[in-house]
Length: 118
Image 1 (tube, one colour):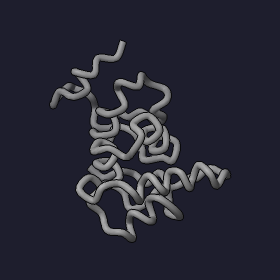
Image 2 (cartoon, rainbow, N blue to C red):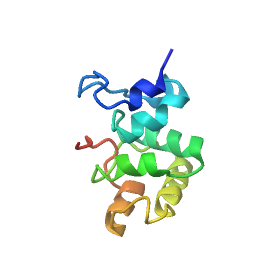
Image 3 (cartoon, rainbow, N blue to C red):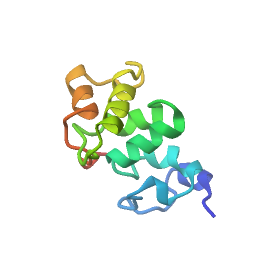
């Protein structure tokens, strides 16, 4: 059983390198905390799953995306890429406070999966 209150607690005892590679491998209720705390990589799969669940890029995802320069491993299908690109480009500037060039890299042709810096 995942206790999301423990995930949010500062100094919870989790090792700094304790991470989840695929958000879909853990309960959905844990996603916001894992993303906000940068405990999951900014992979195409994770970012698109989070946007799909929330309906948009929210403040938790914006926190993760602001910590990477670009994103990698795009799927072969153009439709999924276009949908995610549209969601990221349309994210409110107050949430995703990065310049347009970086936003374009995050949404389009960058390298998904760059290690987040903490």
